[in-house]
Length: 349
Image 1 (cartoon, one colour):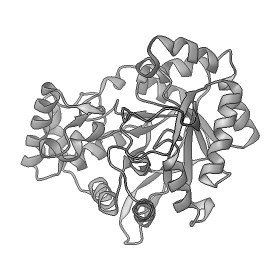
Image 2: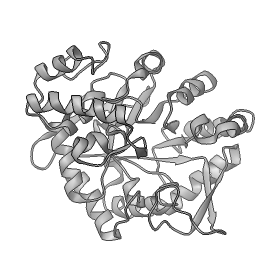
Image 3: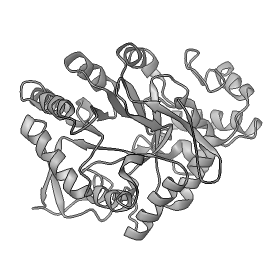
Image 4: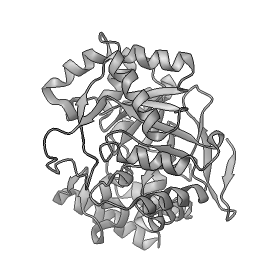
């Protein structure tokens, strides 16, 4: 590992390897769902400025997906990144949905504001994965995609249809397509991009993945991944790309901010736990956001913490939170009050 310095001379974190590959990513990274208009849209100019701010802050890993804004985020991220040397950053996107011209009006149910006029068809087959990858290359305007992740496979997304789509990955050749892309050098790493730990564990039993982008399952509010997923990843050399450190928003500014939790309205018990977290942070004069971002980064299986941002100020706030000094006494207080699992590593460790 080696320190990466920003243009202002501040360390943003350390570079960490992805699994057993040669890829290294910055400990803080940028996710692009907000660039696709999640909850609120933004202009092309603002999207470009946001990516530029991340770059100037020292971030060198960027993640996207066709799903974000129904291909809008890929267009915007590619437009911004093509201005920088390709050898200096790591890029990931996802497969599992192919996007076709929309035939019915968009109902807004997925949270995208002003998405592009395309609709998804789930396709995890061998040819579907390859076609999705090629489509992403064209939308990004970048041939060399480093990491390809199977997007949103799992029961939480597909319900009773999950076994059908899982069969597309196994018997239908979806995993074989990933392996072929990796073996040919078209990508350097493959894995999953999901919101549920069970899908990652199931994938590891069927296929040799390098990493998994896991959103929201290892945070100040949720630490059940310590039971089985994180130990399994350590044993297998699988890296976690940790998304959703704010659990969709509530940990960014606490009870005075966005009360979203896992893409919905936070329930009462979550708000009560956040109030307890905020009280500890207040006693030690540390913003909740800093604790939320730095906590998951301490686990050895976590290679990077992905943050979303829709404007320059949000990028700068996330970077400042990630770099904020946190006293050891704060972590000890969280453990003493039962707000952190005793097994969870913290930055002072």
